[in-house]
Every structure is written in C-alpha cells, then in structure tokens.
Image (tube, rainbow, N blue to C red; front, side, top):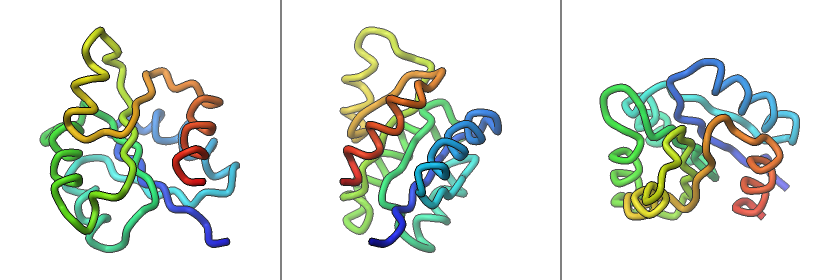
Length: 122
C-alpha cells in the first residue's frame, strides 16, 4: 500500500505543526502550504489524496481556493476538509456550498481529525 499524501493549507505555523505531528505519526505523508498560491503550485506538482483547508487564509480565502479546486476536473475528486475557527450556525452549509466535503472546528480535536482523515482515505 502506498503512503497517502495529505496537503495542509494553513497560514498558522502552530496549527500546521499539530496536524503534521499527528498525521505523520499515523504514517501519512504531509505536504504544507501557507496560502492559496503555494497550495495551487503544490497541486500542479503532484496530487495529494486529501486536503485540509484553513478557511481564513491571507489573500485568496480557503473557501475560494476550494471552489477553484472543485472546478478543476483534475483536482475535483480530492476530498477537502475545512479547518475553521468559524463554527457558527450556517457555516457548515456555506463550506459545503464552496465544495468542502467536511469540516473540523479549531482548536482541532486530533482524535476526530485522525478518524475523519482515515474515513476519507479508506
């Protein structure tokens, strides 16, 4: 079985670090982008099996980046899980409308993260 690749798109180093440590411990290959432009370059270089997307990115938002990913026929199959501190009523519907397959609120529950990633990649 080949190692599954996960792209984390998150501008905060501490958030990336927590997710990176947890996912690497589970055997995943972890790629990291700090903004939408870097994420797009990484997608063009090679496809991840799953994307963890911060919604509040500098410049192009995670919501807009997800729309671009889902509009591209080469990338649209990649599951996108939103990572967000904005977990207000109606936000989940908004994230799904942008193309996110699921979401996890911050601070990230690492057990939930591992379970959700495992479900999407199994």
